Amino acid sequence: MCGGAGFLGSRIVAAFVDRGDEVVVVDAMLAETGGDAAHLAAVRDAIELKPSAIEDVPDLGRLLKGAALVVDCMAWTRHVAAFDNPIYDMRLNLESHLRLILAARGVPGTRILYLGSRGEYGRTTAARITEDTPLEPRDVQSVHKAAADQHFRLFAELGGLSALSLRLPNCFGPGQPVAGKDIGLVGGWIRSALAGEPIVLYGSGRRRPLLFADDAASVVSRLSDQPFTGYQAFNLAGRDVELSDLAARIVSMAGRGSVAQAPMPDEVAVMDIGDTVFVDTALRQLIGRVPDVDLDAALGATVAYFKERLR
Image (tube, rainbow, N blue to C red; front, side, top):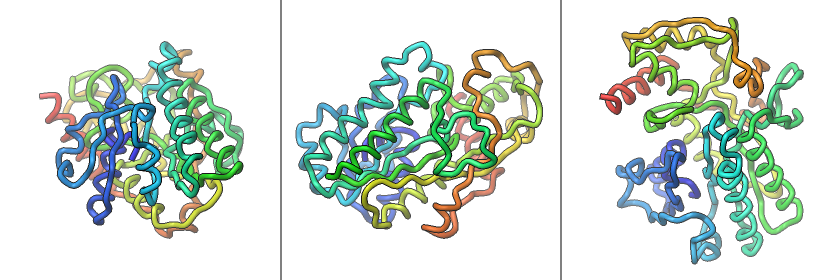
């Protein structure tokens, strides 16, 4: 598991441990990535943890050779910050994956499940976003995520490894970052509400797909049992939510804060992905029903986590 000490990665690690799998976690826990050994505390005795960047793992070839599946969760998820530090973003959202690919090419038969992003599609004029929709990313992070995705496609087609790209929407849940700037839509709004500050809505009628982290982990676990060769891509749509409704739910659960509207700033508009429906029909045909926890339950657990961490 590459990047397994992060917010989402650690939830996937827990899902594999729960079903009795042997798990090796490689994670350098670099600044601003959210990687933290504390996320793995509940499963620490059941896993092997290598606190190292992918390029510094001396026995990476051996690990790949012994792995039934490599889950690649390596990422830097701060979209706004990436505009100010695109080189750091490139290192974490592109170079790290290329290093894994190069190592995997030396171990024929390696299977990699890469966690991609809805952002790779950018703002499209298509009626619905399927796996065949062209990738037209609109921000630095999504450009690098899409580039990594296409490197997996290229090298899988050249042979020596197989890659499955799972493109995710905005993920949230307990364990996500609570400090610093640019901590994600749901996290940022929860923190604002708990501080008694307004949640600022840009425009009206806007929607976004959201995904609870444990639902993502469950899908990854189920996909790990699917045979795949070459390169395949699947969307995981999550739940389509109107942003005004999301903001109102968060304020109600927080017991503080308010909702205000404002024009969309230029720096937000340039990377806005629009409201095109994100669909995962292909994934559902493959694995059947996709888990979708009750939105209030998921938000309630996340708000409770933020309250505990911000006391």
